Image (cartoon, rainbow, N blue to C red; front, side, top):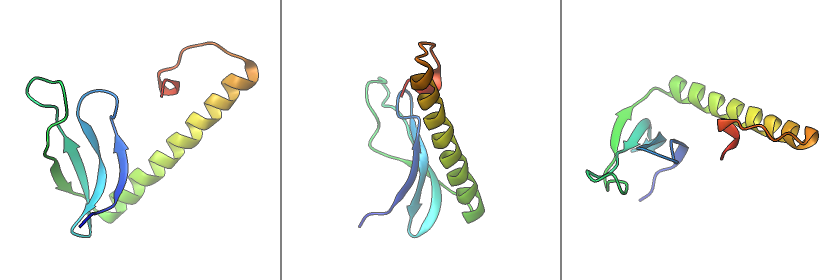
Amino acid sequence: MSEPVYMVWDLDAGRRTGSASCQGLPHYFACPMTADGDEYAQHFTLTPISAPLLAQASAACRHAARLRGAMVALRATLNLTFHCPCLAR
């Protein structure tokens, strides 16, 4: 049985976090690194969240994606070579 994952944050370094459904209800999840810090652990910590909070987080994620897309387009249009951490992905 699988449950949908709504959003995933922090994929680059450190623990993986995001929101997903568990038994049909929205949850915040965190997957820590192993003790040696070389890979992700095989377990997740789940914290129930409300449907309004999930909706708010989803809207913020969509807004961030639109903003990132606009910044990438602007950089390409103006042929800019500045460094911005949000464009590194």
